Length: 444
Image (tube, rainbow, N blue to C red; front, side, top):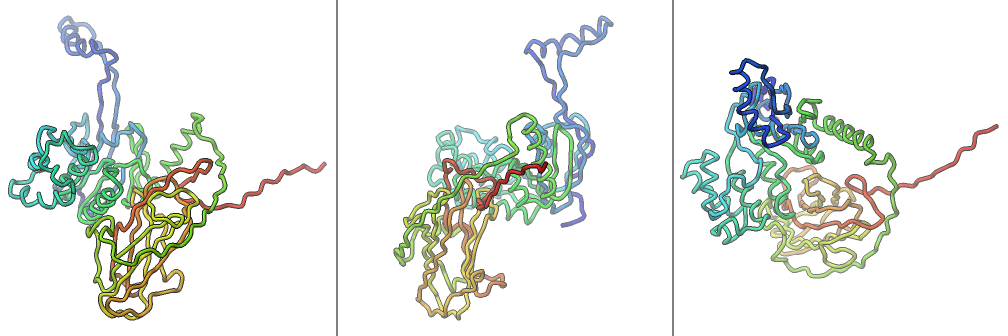
Protein backbone atom coordinates (compact mmCIF):
# COMPACT_ATOMS: atom_id res chain seq x y z
CA UNK A 1 0.00 0.00 0.00
CA UNK A 2 1.33 3.39 -1.03
CA UNK A 3 1.34 6.59 1.05
CA UNK A 4 0.00 8.42 -2.01
CA UNK A 5 -3.56 9.73 -1.57
CA UNK A 6 -6.01 8.30 -4.13
CA UNK A 7 -9.22 9.86 -2.72
CA UNK A 8 -9.50 12.98 -0.58
CA UNK A 9 -12.88 14.02 0.85
CA UNK A 10 -13.13 17.32 2.74
CA UNK A 11 -16.24 18.56 4.59
CA UNK A 12 -18.55 16.83 2.12
CA UNK A 13 -22.27 17.54 2.53
CA UNK A 14 -25.36 16.72 0.51
CA UNK A 15 -28.76 18.28 1.19
CA UNK A 16 -32.04 17.20 -0.43
CA UNK A 17 -35.14 19.37 -0.59
CA UNK A 18 -38.13 17.37 0.66
CA UNK A 19 -41.60 18.60 -0.33
CA UNK A 20 -44.72 17.49 1.53
CA UNK A 21 -46.98 18.06 -1.48
CA UNK A 22 -46.30 18.36 -5.24
CA UNK A 23 -47.69 21.90 -5.34
CA UNK A 24 -45.06 23.00 -2.81
CA UNK A 25 -42.40 22.41 -5.43
CA UNK A 26 -44.18 24.83 -7.76
CA UNK A 27 -44.57 27.34 -4.93
CA UNK A 28 -40.86 27.16 -4.18
CA UNK A 29 -40.09 27.98 -7.79
CA UNK A 30 -42.32 31.09 -8.05
CA UNK A 31 -43.14 32.44 -4.60
CA UNK A 32 -39.65 33.46 -3.35
CA UNK A 33 -39.20 35.56 -6.50
CA UNK A 34 -42.55 37.29 -5.99
CA UNK A 35 -41.90 37.77 -2.27
CA UNK A 36 -38.49 39.25 -2.99
CA UNK A 37 -39.96 41.63 -5.58
CA UNK A 38 -42.62 42.69 -3.08
CA UNK A 39 -40.01 43.28 -0.39
CA UNK A 40 -41.47 40.77 2.07
CA UNK A 41 -39.76 37.93 3.91
CA UNK A 42 -39.21 34.88 1.74
CA UNK A 43 -40.88 31.65 2.80
CA UNK A 44 -39.34 28.19 2.34
CA UNK A 45 -41.74 25.51 1.08
CA UNK A 46 -39.53 22.48 1.66
CA UNK A 47 -37.75 20.66 4.47
CA UNK A 48 -34.02 20.03 4.36
CA UNK A 49 -32.72 16.48 4.60
CA UNK A 50 -28.95 16.19 4.96
CA UNK A 51 -27.91 12.84 3.52
CA UNK A 52 -24.27 13.72 4.30
CA UNK A 53 -22.98 16.29 6.76
CA UNK A 54 -19.32 17.40 6.96
CA UNK A 55 -17.81 14.06 5.94
CA UNK A 56 -14.02 14.01 5.67
CA UNK A 57 -11.54 11.18 5.09
CA UNK A 58 -8.56 10.18 2.95
CA UNK A 59 -7.97 6.92 1.09
CA UNK A 60 -4.42 5.87 0.32
CA UNK A 61 -3.55 4.18 -2.94
CA UNK A 62 -4.06 0.43 -2.61
CA UNK A 63 -6.37 0.58 0.42
CA UNK A 64 -9.54 -1.53 0.53
CA UNK A 65 -12.16 0.33 2.57
CA UNK A 66 -15.61 -0.92 3.54
CA UNK A 67 -18.42 1.57 4.08
CA UNK A 68 -21.04 0.29 6.53
CA UNK A 69 -24.14 1.75 8.13
CA UNK A 70 -27.93 1.34 8.30
CA UNK A 71 -30.30 2.07 5.43
CA UNK A 72 -30.49 5.78 4.74
CA UNK A 73 -27.15 6.50 6.39
CA UNK A 74 -25.73 8.12 3.23
CA UNK A 75 -23.46 5.33 1.98
CA UNK A 76 -24.78 5.18 -1.60
CA UNK A 77 -24.99 8.98 -1.76
CA UNK A 78 -21.30 9.14 -0.87
CA UNK A 79 -20.33 6.70 -3.63
CA UNK A 80 -22.45 8.51 -6.21
CA UNK A 81 -20.72 11.80 -5.41
CA UNK A 82 -17.30 10.13 -5.66
CA UNK A 83 -18.27 8.79 -9.10
CA UNK A 84 -19.54 12.22 -10.26
CA UNK A 85 -23.06 10.91 -10.86
CA UNK A 86 -24.42 13.19 -8.12
CA UNK A 87 -23.45 16.76 -7.22
CA UNK A 88 -22.62 17.64 -3.63
CA UNK A 89 -24.09 20.62 -1.79
CA UNK A 90 -20.85 21.55 -0.03
CA UNK A 91 -17.33 20.22 0.29
CA UNK A 92 -14.56 19.03 -1.98
CA UNK A 93 -13.82 15.59 -3.46
CA UNK A 94 -10.48 14.90 -5.14
CA UNK A 95 -9.64 11.62 -6.87
CA UNK A 96 -6.47 10.50 -8.58
CA UNK A 97 -6.85 7.74 -11.13
CA UNK A 98 -9.38 6.09 -13.41
CA UNK A 99 -12.63 5.22 -11.59
CA UNK A 100 -14.82 2.20 -12.33
CA UNK A 101 -18.11 1.95 -10.47
CA UNK A 102 -20.33 -1.01 -9.69
CA UNK A 103 -23.36 0.88 -8.43
CA UNK A 104 -26.64 -0.19 -10.02
CA UNK A 105 -25.85 -3.12 -12.30
CA UNK A 106 -27.02 -2.47 -15.83
CA UNK A 107 -28.15 1.09 -15.12
CA UNK A 108 -26.72 2.12 -18.51
CA UNK A 109 -28.31 -0.72 -20.49
CA UNK A 110 -30.80 -0.03 -23.27
CA UNK A 111 -33.46 -2.78 -23.10
CA UNK A 112 -34.02 -2.64 -26.86
CA UNK A 113 -30.34 -3.24 -27.64
CA UNK A 114 -28.77 -6.67 -27.83
CA UNK A 115 -26.17 -7.78 -25.33
CA UNK A 116 -23.38 -7.06 -27.82
CA UNK A 117 -24.73 -3.59 -28.55
CA UNK A 118 -24.99 -2.84 -24.84
CA UNK A 119 -21.37 -3.94 -24.38
CA UNK A 120 -20.35 -1.30 -26.92
CA UNK A 121 -22.62 1.30 -25.26
CA UNK A 122 -21.38 0.66 -21.72
CA UNK A 123 -17.78 0.35 -22.83
CA UNK A 124 -18.00 3.82 -24.31
CA UNK A 125 -19.60 5.15 -21.10
CA UNK A 126 -16.74 3.63 -19.11
CA UNK A 127 -14.22 5.42 -21.31
CA UNK A 128 -13.00 2.60 -23.56
CA UNK A 129 -12.13 3.12 -27.20
CA UNK A 130 -13.82 1.02 -29.89
CA UNK A 131 -10.64 -1.02 -30.31
CA UNK A 132 -10.51 -1.73 -26.58
CA UNK A 133 -14.19 -2.70 -26.50
CA UNK A 134 -13.83 -5.11 -29.42
CA UNK A 135 -10.78 -6.65 -27.78
CA UNK A 136 -12.68 -7.22 -24.52
CA UNK A 137 -15.86 -8.73 -26.03
CA UNK A 138 -14.59 -12.36 -25.98
CA UNK A 139 -13.57 -12.01 -22.33
CA UNK A 140 -16.94 -10.46 -21.41
CA UNK A 141 -18.86 -13.17 -23.28
CA UNK A 142 -16.90 -15.94 -21.58
CA UNK A 143 -17.35 -14.44 -18.11
CA UNK A 144 -21.08 -13.66 -18.53
CA UNK A 145 -21.70 -17.16 -19.96
CA UNK A 146 -25.17 -16.47 -21.35
CA UNK A 147 -24.64 -18.22 -24.69
CA UNK A 148 -26.43 -17.01 -27.81
CA UNK A 149 -28.62 -14.69 -25.74
CA UNK A 150 -25.75 -12.22 -26.08
CA UNK A 151 -27.20 -11.44 -29.54
CA UNK A 152 -30.78 -10.95 -28.26
CA UNK A 153 -32.35 -7.76 -26.81
CA UNK A 154 -31.67 -7.56 -23.08
CA UNK A 155 -35.39 -6.98 -22.42
CA UNK A 156 -35.76 -10.73 -23.04
CA UNK A 157 -33.16 -11.63 -20.40
CA UNK A 158 -33.89 -13.15 -17.03
CA UNK A 159 -32.75 -11.11 -14.03
CA UNK A 160 -29.82 -13.50 -13.57
CA UNK A 161 -28.66 -13.16 -17.18
CA UNK A 162 -29.02 -9.37 -16.93
CA UNK A 163 -26.89 -9.31 -13.79
CA UNK A 164 -24.25 -11.61 -15.33
CA UNK A 165 -23.76 -9.40 -18.38
CA UNK A 166 -23.84 -6.14 -16.40
CA UNK A 167 -21.22 -7.40 -13.95
CA UNK A 168 -19.00 -8.78 -16.72
CA UNK A 169 -19.05 -5.42 -18.54
CA UNK A 170 -18.40 -3.41 -15.37
CA UNK A 171 -15.33 -5.40 -14.32
CA UNK A 172 -13.85 -5.49 -17.83
CA UNK A 173 -12.25 -2.07 -17.22
CA UNK A 174 -8.87 -2.06 -15.46
CA UNK A 175 -9.53 0.73 -12.94
CA UNK A 176 -7.19 2.53 -10.56
CA UNK A 177 -10.12 3.21 -8.21
CA UNK A 178 -12.96 0.70 -7.88
CA UNK A 179 -16.23 1.80 -6.26
CA UNK A 180 -18.63 -1.03 -5.36
CA UNK A 181 -22.15 -0.74 -3.96
CA UNK A 182 -23.57 -4.10 -2.79
CA UNK A 183 -23.35 -5.88 -6.15
CA UNK A 184 -21.79 -9.22 -5.24
CA UNK A 185 -25.08 -11.07 -4.73
CA UNK A 186 -25.73 -11.49 -8.46
CA UNK A 187 -26.64 -14.63 -10.36
CA UNK A 188 -26.55 -18.15 -9.01
CA UNK A 189 -24.07 -19.64 -6.54
CA UNK A 190 -21.46 -20.51 -9.18
CA UNK A 191 -21.58 -17.07 -10.77
CA UNK A 192 -21.36 -15.45 -7.32
CA UNK A 193 -18.16 -17.37 -6.73
CA UNK A 194 -16.78 -16.19 -10.08
CA UNK A 195 -17.84 -12.61 -9.34
CA UNK A 196 -16.23 -12.64 -5.90
CA UNK A 197 -13.00 -14.08 -7.29
CA UNK A 198 -12.90 -11.38 -9.98
CA UNK A 199 -13.49 -8.77 -7.29
CA UNK A 200 -10.57 -10.16 -5.32
CA UNK A 201 -8.37 -10.00 -8.44
CA UNK A 202 -9.31 -6.35 -9.02
CA UNK A 203 -8.75 -5.47 -5.39
CA UNK A 204 -5.18 -6.72 -5.61
CA UNK A 205 -4.40 -4.04 -8.19
CA UNK A 206 -6.37 -0.93 -7.24
CA UNK A 207 -7.90 1.24 -4.54
CA UNK A 208 -11.35 0.06 -3.46
CA UNK A 209 -14.36 1.61 -1.71
CA UNK A 210 -16.88 -1.10 -0.94
CA UNK A 211 -20.41 -0.65 0.49
CA UNK A 212 -22.15 -3.70 1.93
CA UNK A 213 -24.68 -4.69 4.57
CA UNK A 214 -22.83 -7.99 4.99
CA UNK A 215 -20.36 -7.47 7.81
CA UNK A 216 -18.74 -10.84 7.11
CA UNK A 217 -18.02 -9.70 3.55
CA UNK A 218 -16.53 -6.41 4.74
CA UNK A 219 -14.33 -8.23 7.26
CA UNK A 220 -13.25 -10.64 4.51
CA UNK A 221 -12.51 -8.05 1.81
CA UNK A 222 -11.47 -4.89 3.64
CA UNK A 223 -8.53 -3.85 5.80
CA UNK A 224 -10.27 -0.65 6.92
CA UNK A 225 -13.90 0.34 7.41
CA UNK A 226 -15.91 3.53 7.90
CA UNK A 227 -19.19 3.53 9.84
CA UNK A 228 -21.69 6.15 8.66
CA UNK A 229 -24.96 6.96 10.41
CA UNK A 230 -27.34 9.83 9.69
CA UNK A 231 -24.90 11.30 7.19
CA UNK A 232 -21.93 11.49 9.54
CA UNK A 233 -18.86 9.35 10.19
CA UNK A 234 -19.22 7.52 13.51
CA UNK A 235 -15.97 5.57 13.36
CA UNK A 236 -13.05 5.07 10.97
CA UNK A 237 -10.60 2.25 11.71
CA UNK A 238 -9.79 -1.46 11.37
CA UNK A 239 -12.59 -3.38 9.64
CA UNK A 240 -13.28 -5.96 12.41
CA UNK A 241 -13.53 -3.30 15.12
CA UNK A 242 -15.75 -0.97 13.07
CA UNK A 243 -18.05 -3.85 12.05
CA UNK A 244 -18.35 -4.97 15.66
CA UNK A 245 -19.35 -1.46 16.73
CA UNK A 246 -21.94 -1.26 13.92
CA UNK A 247 -23.40 -4.62 14.94
CA UNK A 248 -23.66 -3.55 18.59
CA UNK A 249 -25.23 -0.25 17.55
CA UNK A 250 -27.94 -2.01 15.52
CA UNK A 251 -28.62 -4.56 18.27
CA UNK A 252 -29.11 -1.75 20.77
CA UNK A 253 -31.60 -0.07 18.43
CA UNK A 254 -33.52 -3.29 17.87
CA UNK A 255 -33.63 -3.96 21.60
CA UNK A 256 -34.91 -0.43 22.18
CA UNK A 257 -37.70 -1.03 19.64
CA UNK A 258 -38.59 -4.39 21.19
CA UNK A 259 -37.72 -6.31 17.99
CA UNK A 260 -34.94 -8.38 19.53
CA UNK A 261 -34.81 -10.39 22.73
CA UNK A 262 -31.64 -10.66 24.76
CA UNK A 263 -31.87 -14.44 25.10
CA UNK A 264 -31.68 -17.18 22.46
CA UNK A 265 -32.79 -20.76 22.97
CA UNK A 266 -31.17 -23.50 20.97
CA UNK A 267 -32.99 -26.62 19.93
CA UNK A 268 -31.28 -29.97 19.81
CA UNK A 269 -29.66 -31.21 16.62
CA UNK A 270 -30.39 -34.73 15.44
CA UNK A 271 -27.50 -36.32 13.60
CA UNK A 272 -28.71 -38.43 10.71
CA UNK A 273 -26.23 -41.14 9.83
CA UNK A 274 -26.07 -42.02 6.16
CA UNK A 275 -24.54 -45.10 4.64
CA UNK A 276 -21.29 -44.86 2.70
CA UNK A 277 -21.64 -45.32 -1.04
CA UNK A 278 -18.34 -45.72 -2.88
CA UNK A 279 -20.00 -45.07 -6.26
CA UNK A 280 -18.12 -44.47 -9.50
CA UNK A 281 -14.39 -43.87 -9.86
CA UNK A 282 -14.44 -42.70 -13.48
CA UNK A 283 -13.71 -39.07 -14.33
CA UNK A 284 -16.82 -36.86 -14.14
CA UNK A 285 -17.08 -34.65 -17.26
CA UNK A 286 -19.23 -32.18 -15.28
CA UNK A 287 -16.65 -31.75 -12.52
CA UNK A 288 -15.87 -29.20 -11.21
CA UNK A 289 -19.12 -27.23 -11.31
CA UNK A 290 -17.25 -24.02 -12.17
CA UNK A 291 -15.59 -25.67 -15.18
CA UNK A 292 -11.94 -24.90 -15.80
CA UNK A 293 -12.21 -21.34 -14.56
CA UNK A 294 -10.38 -20.58 -11.30
CA UNK A 295 -8.54 -23.90 -11.48
CA UNK A 296 -4.76 -24.05 -11.31
CA UNK A 297 -1.87 -26.32 -10.40
CA UNK A 298 0.89 -28.42 -11.96
CA UNK A 299 -1.49 -31.33 -12.61
CA UNK A 300 0.79 -34.08 -11.29
CA UNK A 301 -2.16 -35.10 -9.12
CA UNK A 302 -5.59 -34.13 -10.37
CA UNK A 303 -9.06 -34.43 -8.86
CA UNK A 304 -11.21 -35.99 -11.61
CA UNK A 305 -14.35 -36.59 -9.58
CA UNK A 306 -15.84 -34.88 -6.54
CA UNK A 307 -19.15 -36.25 -5.27
CA UNK A 308 -21.09 -34.68 -2.42
CA UNK A 309 -23.28 -37.22 -0.65
CA UNK A 310 -25.89 -36.23 1.89
CA UNK A 311 -27.06 -39.06 4.11
CA UNK A 312 -25.48 -41.52 1.68
CA UNK A 313 -27.08 -40.13 -1.50
CA UNK A 314 -25.77 -37.73 -4.13
CA UNK A 315 -27.46 -34.39 -3.48
CA UNK A 316 -26.94 -30.65 -3.28
CA UNK A 317 -29.66 -30.01 -0.68
CA UNK A 318 -28.85 -30.41 3.00
CA UNK A 319 -30.47 -29.67 6.33
CA UNK A 320 -29.07 -29.05 9.78
CA UNK A 321 -27.95 -32.39 11.26
CA UNK A 322 -27.51 -34.25 7.95
CA UNK A 323 -24.36 -36.31 7.42
CA UNK A 324 -22.24 -34.99 4.52
CA UNK A 325 -19.55 -36.96 2.73
CA UNK A 326 -17.20 -35.35 0.24
CA UNK A 327 -15.77 -38.14 -1.91
CA UNK A 328 -12.80 -37.29 -4.14
CA UNK A 329 -11.23 -39.41 -6.89
CA UNK A 330 -7.64 -38.35 -7.56
CA UNK A 331 -5.46 -39.57 -10.44
CA UNK A 332 -1.70 -39.29 -10.88
CA UNK A 333 -0.49 -38.06 -14.27
CA UNK A 334 3.10 -38.95 -13.36
CA UNK A 335 4.91 -40.69 -10.50
CA UNK A 336 4.50 -38.85 -7.20
CA UNK A 337 6.21 -39.68 -3.93
CA UNK A 338 4.24 -40.38 -0.77
CA UNK A 339 3.19 -37.52 1.48
CA UNK A 340 0.82 -35.43 -0.70
CA UNK A 341 -1.94 -33.55 1.13
CA UNK A 342 -5.62 -33.18 0.15
CA UNK A 343 -7.99 -30.68 1.76
CA UNK A 344 -11.24 -28.76 1.35
CA UNK A 345 -12.74 -25.45 2.46
CA UNK A 346 -16.45 -24.62 2.78
CA UNK A 347 -17.31 -21.00 1.97
CA UNK A 348 -20.61 -19.18 2.27
CA UNK A 349 -22.22 -16.99 -0.39
CA UNK A 350 -20.10 -14.02 0.75
CA UNK A 351 -16.85 -15.96 0.15
CA UNK A 352 -16.17 -16.18 3.89
CA UNK A 353 -14.26 -19.32 4.90
CA UNK A 354 -16.54 -21.19 7.34
CA UNK A 355 -14.54 -24.35 8.00
CA UNK A 356 -12.23 -26.82 6.30
CA UNK A 357 -10.10 -29.89 6.84
CA UNK A 358 -7.13 -31.64 5.25
CA UNK A 359 -5.14 -34.83 5.60
CA UNK A 360 -2.36 -33.01 7.43
CA UNK A 361 -4.81 -32.10 10.22
CA UNK A 362 -5.45 -35.83 10.68
CA UNK A 363 -1.77 -36.78 10.38
CA UNK A 364 -2.46 -38.64 7.15
CA UNK A 365 -1.21 -38.29 3.57
CA UNK A 366 -1.51 -39.95 0.16
CA UNK A 367 0.61 -42.97 -0.70
CA UNK A 368 3.22 -43.00 -3.43
CA UNK A 369 1.48 -43.13 -6.82
CA UNK A 370 2.50 -43.98 -10.38
CA UNK A 371 1.09 -42.49 -13.58
CA UNK A 372 -2.53 -43.56 -14.12
CA UNK A 373 -3.06 -44.75 -10.54
CA UNK A 374 -6.17 -43.53 -8.71
CA UNK A 375 -6.96 -43.03 -5.06
CA UNK A 376 -10.23 -42.21 -3.30
CA UNK A 377 -10.31 -39.78 -0.36
CA UNK A 378 -13.44 -39.24 1.72
CA UNK A 379 -14.21 -36.50 4.24
CA UNK A 380 -17.33 -37.02 6.37
CA UNK A 381 -18.83 -34.42 8.68
CA UNK A 382 -22.23 -33.40 10.11
CA UNK A 383 -24.00 -30.39 8.63
CA UNK A 384 -23.91 -27.76 11.36
CA UNK A 385 -24.28 -24.79 9.01
CA UNK A 386 -26.82 -22.00 9.12
CA UNK A 387 -29.35 -21.70 6.32
CA UNK A 388 -27.84 -20.47 3.04
CA UNK A 389 -25.80 -21.34 -0.02
CA UNK A 390 -22.26 -22.70 0.13
CA UNK A 391 -19.41 -23.75 -2.13
CA UNK A 392 -16.55 -26.18 -1.59
CA UNK A 393 -13.01 -25.48 -2.77
CA UNK A 394 -10.35 -28.20 -3.05
CA UNK A 395 -6.58 -28.31 -2.90
CA UNK A 396 -3.95 -30.99 -3.50
CA UNK A 397 -0.30 -30.22 -2.79
CA UNK A 398 2.96 -32.08 -2.21
CA UNK A 399 3.59 -30.65 1.26
CA UNK A 400 1.32 -28.66 3.61
CA UNK A 401 3.59 -25.61 3.96
CA UNK A 402 4.45 -25.14 0.28
CA UNK A 403 2.47 -22.61 -1.78
CA UNK A 404 2.52 -24.70 -4.98
CA UNK A 405 -0.50 -26.91 -5.71
CA UNK A 406 -0.84 -30.06 -7.76
CA UNK A 407 -4.50 -29.09 -8.19
CA UNK A 408 -6.46 -26.13 -6.83
CA UNK A 409 -10.19 -25.69 -7.54
CA UNK A 410 -11.96 -22.55 -6.31
CA UNK A 411 -15.51 -23.93 -6.73
CA UNK A 412 -15.64 -27.72 -6.92
CA UNK A 413 -19.15 -28.22 -5.62
CA UNK A 414 -22.05 -26.02 -4.53
CA UNK A 415 -24.83 -26.91 -2.14
CA UNK A 416 -27.61 -25.32 -0.12
CA UNK A 417 -28.62 -25.72 3.49
CA UNK A 418 -32.32 -25.28 4.21
CA UNK A 419 -33.78 -24.11 7.49
CA UNK A 420 -34.82 -26.76 9.98
CA UNK A 421 -38.00 -26.33 12.01
CA UNK A 422 -37.20 -25.75 15.68
CA UNK A 423 -33.48 -25.24 15.06
CA UNK A 424 -32.06 -21.73 14.83
CA UNK A 425 -28.35 -21.33 14.11
CA UNK A 426 -27.02 -17.98 15.33
CA UNK A 427 -23.96 -16.98 13.35
CA UNK A 428 -22.29 -19.16 10.74
CA UNK A 429 -22.19 -22.57 12.36
CA UNK A 430 -23.92 -24.52 15.12
CA UNK A 431 -21.85 -25.38 18.19
CA UNK A 432 -23.38 -27.86 20.61
CA UNK A 433 -23.57 -26.66 24.20
CA UNK A 434 -24.28 -28.33 27.50
CA UNK A 435 -26.59 -25.93 29.33
CA UNK A 436 -27.35 -26.07 33.04
CA UNK A 437 -29.82 -23.88 34.93
CA UNK A 438 -29.72 -23.90 38.71
CA UNK A 439 -32.08 -22.20 41.11
CA UNK A 440 -30.41 -20.45 44.01
CA UNK A 441 -32.18 -20.21 47.35
CA UNK A 442 -31.04 -17.47 49.68
CA UNK A 443 -30.02 -18.74 53.09
CA UNK A 444 -31.98 -17.36 56.05
